[in-house]
Length: 103
Image (cartoon, rainbow, N blue to C red; front, side, top):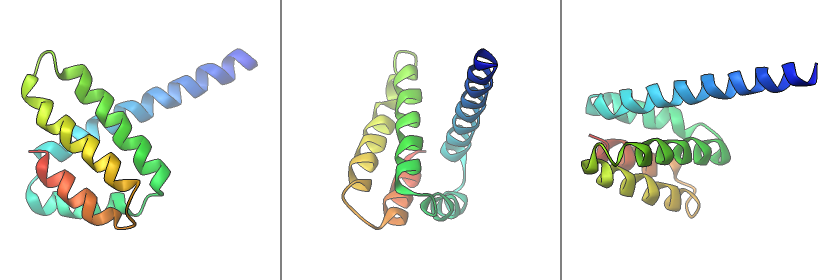
């Protein structure tokens, strides 16, 4: 039962990873109004959950840098947002700026 629980947890983590990767790709291609709406939705998350999501996005972009060097600017925006989230209470403002810089 222990191995099954670990496998189920891993499958759940993989599904979450895929969902976040899809969400990030969608955000990058979204229109301005959709990005602002998404910022409001993401801002409702707890700061720890939001930081985990942005950290995951950082890893996704890092993995793509060798093929798409232009994503360096996106990586810089993500790292800046991650830093600002730890210093401010206005998550929505940080996210709006980040999402608008994505594409």
